[in-house]
Image (tube, rainbow over all chains, first blue to last red; front, side):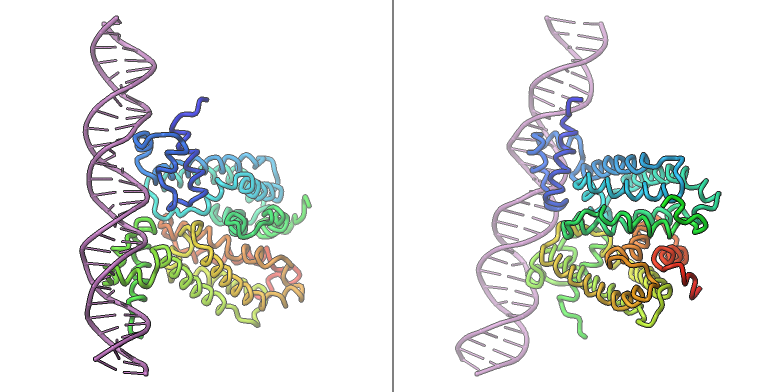
Length: 199
Length: 199
DNA sequence: ACCTCCACTAGAGTATCACTCTAGAGTGTT
DNA sequence: AACACTCTAGAGTGATACTCTAGTGGAGGT
């Protein structure tokens, strides 16, 4: 459990990226904060980008784990949707720096292998969600649609909404709107036969 | 209508940013593509960031204009929602490079005055949408909610969904899912009394 | 005890690039 | 002609991501 130089560099990277942005962050600043030499930095990470990529994947995993763990397999349609949305909002609020890094950084210019890894992570998450979702579609409680579209309905609005908070433009806690967001998502995704089944 | 050096630089910037990302783009590459000297570049734009910022605002305006113009003031609730979503998807597909620049670039580290300008643009858009929306809330056709949440419901899912396409990860036309996205948004936002009023 | 490896550290050196500076060309105004 | 102003030119500069060479220390074998 002793923190290695590698871990120190990752932690320092998160701090400096959060403070100065990816562009503004210098590897010197990260090195200094982690008390590591230049040689060490480039021994562990081939480039500044690679450190950012590693950090990204690590944070993505934690985020996904947190979302999936919120999903009780026995939960009904409305209940599950509420849990997913709350898990997302909670994670963002409780991990502000990490969320900023995940959602506000430009993924456009990243390496191919990182994209692959990201895709892998995404499908692992999708799999977890599908295990809960597909029986509910079969039972007719949820409207049928592709997993991508389903997930976009859950996360999309919350994400747009969190951006204002993450960027510091809006101070009010995003969770204040949780009920509205959940109500919308339930109407959008749950068949109305059983509407309001759990209030 | 003769293209000035300034316009050439902006156009070249878009091309190079799209090809190499913001980080990877060099001002030399932009200068060369625009056939402008170093002096010209820094005469018009104080920095690479400033060029990107100007480009961002210009594109944001065009995007907003395109969305607002799709909104017929007389349109009913469901009709208006469908138009908004289609306008968004159409614009993204027809302006791929611009959309990539708008939605995939990191806005996190931009100047304060640019953020202000962006906020201004956003509220101009919100105003346009509100003009159409508030009567519909008054008439009880739309659920009441803040403008931010409302817009997050329209744009959020589509945006998450378009990312896969913009990043080249998914080749299928995002508009293929337009009907599903619209159906979800209508269920989420339109009161069910008049559900399906316009098919 | 001694050797051998190898993961890791160290920091001087280099190439690239955003940006600055000074000079001047073109154009319009008085 | 003289001046003012916008724009062009490109050499120069400082910062910085990354490279290179030379270690150091500790674990494992003999």
